[in-house]
Length: 162
Ligand SMILES: [Zn+2]
Image: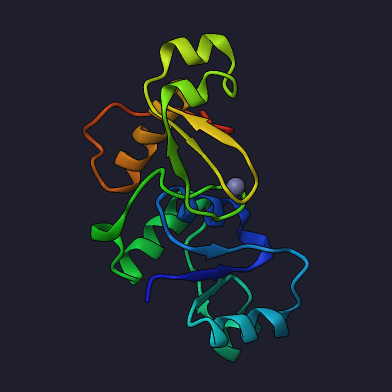
């Protein structure tokens, strides 16, 4: 089981689980009861920092900070072999669909279009993604999360999109 539902305090963790390809529900309008019910009915791990909620049926995240949090989740649920980065929309959790260059031409800003080689669109929210500089930064972070510390390090940069 590698599907998740993440409580509202852990937005960055949820976003990164999606970036790494894992089906992750993140919805701050859900109550604790709804989180627990969804976790049960959809066979998802509920990840939380709330001891009470964890005691009712969730996994209590111990790590401080989002990077350590991701590492803890990857370890705990044995996910490292199943990472499929950039296959899922970090905003709405839908699986991305690759699109061709011609199709992307009208959807991507001209400068980005001329530099990028891969394009994808989210069928859920309509966002368009391409391989740009922020994608490279994210790859560095993924390497770091994956434990390859000897590779180039990223300092304090927080990609907004990819
Ligand atoms: Zn989306």
